Image 1: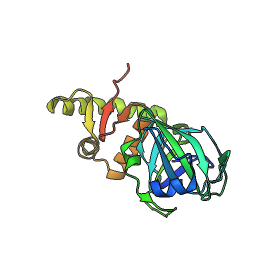
Image 2 (image 1 turned 90 degrees about the vertical axis):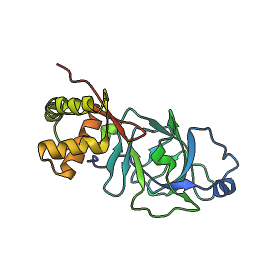
Image 3 (image 1 turned 45 degrees about the vertical axis):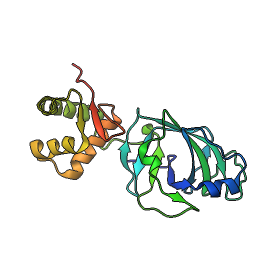
Image 4 (image 1 turned 120 degrees about the vertical axis):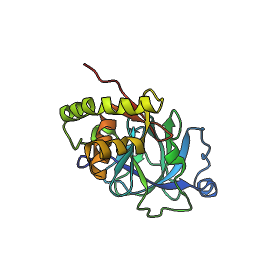
Length: 212
């Protein structure tokens, strides 16, 4: 759950090449950069602000946790090419975003647009420290210690060491612990935020070792 009043950038889509070329002469990009239509923001966002998680849809469901990438706001323009010194509150803008080390696949798959367009499945970027865990850190740590042996057995049976698919992870929670699907998703999201589980580009999950 997002904390109240935090900075979130909702990416409605990628800006078509013909559009950005009309808006600015400085349209060239590095390989890890892109021009995006950004929905209006509820508070001013300074240039160079960094983000490290990706959320999906209106529910802002976590789909990519911290550690996989960082994103920085490089440039902000209005529809006429006026260059802002920050992303102003209440404005829809065109922004150049820079991702490191690479642009995540889910961002690359954002629709190519001619203009801002409402998208209920649009992705958003935020900071991991602005997301509140639905369960306490201590409880999640204990849950992970309980789950880890079962998951390790499954990995061993499948000849994997520390990786498991997202669907297999959720299936283990549902079948072994009679967990509802939505609860399994919540547990996984919390484990990602705590750094116990890392979601890779191919939707595989990498598990941290249990300490102590």
